[in-house]
Length: 370
Image 1 (cartoon, rainbow, N blue to C red):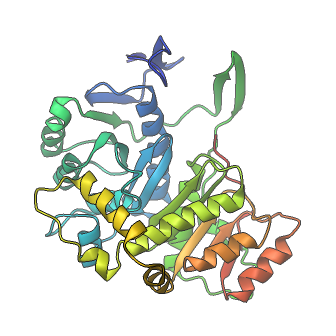
Image 2 (image 1 turned 120 degrees about the vertical axis):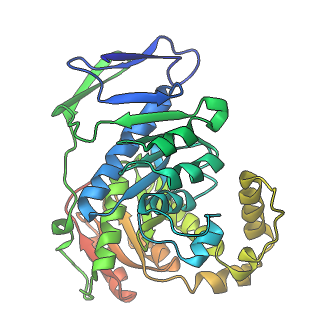
């Protein structure tokens, strides 16, 4: 297929709309549903993210996308008992790719409402069964088992969007886009993010374990496909707070940090003990939990619990201009930081990190995405 006609563009008044290839055929196939313009923007950005994560870590990866930025991204590590409870995951053994998506969606369940899911590995029955229970617009994966496709085709009264992508597809080295009738052209951002980018540790604390390296890679790759400015908090192979599209760096850090705090407060014993009827809808349960954290837990209960959060990694898509970003990061348990460096106040930022005993790596590479 060379082109695919769409119902409309970003908004219903923006017609006609299509996706197409100037040369060759589209590297994707719609197996079910009728994805729209924004669906495909989410699908193609999210696919690049999970493909890069799989390549960098060797682990299955998944992402939950909304409005061309990830609400969450995660690696396919086993779920803990607490994670199963807070993410409403099924009991029993689950495939690594199912665990990856459950963790990605669990990073920020409110923002993942009506998401686009991306999977680095074939979508299996475990993943499809979980997706079938969630409010989601569609999924992209390199392939689907017969069982998974049968399950997904029953979702949304048969209209759930299922897209298959060619995992071997490589885009042209030059990309173009039109804005206000004017064509922009640039080289495709094929920057490979790997552990070599983490070698320039600038803090007194040089202890960077492999688990923190993996979390740094996850943060940086997530940022590469997040609308800038952006900051990402990561813990144990999953994002726990993504701040996207802010004009101020400190606002990114605060926004993402607040999301990380909420993720942690969802594990507060009082939150986990909330009683819900078996037939309550998942969105209603998520909203009730959010309201409980915001309005019922006392400020002291929140502060005491957040003080226990530790071992968090933070990534930034551009340098920190002031040490206040590090101060805010520390409040949400950040110990490891990956950022490009290059500010005229780098020394102040490093001093602030040293004050808290953090490990900070300068990657030397900005990751803006627009």
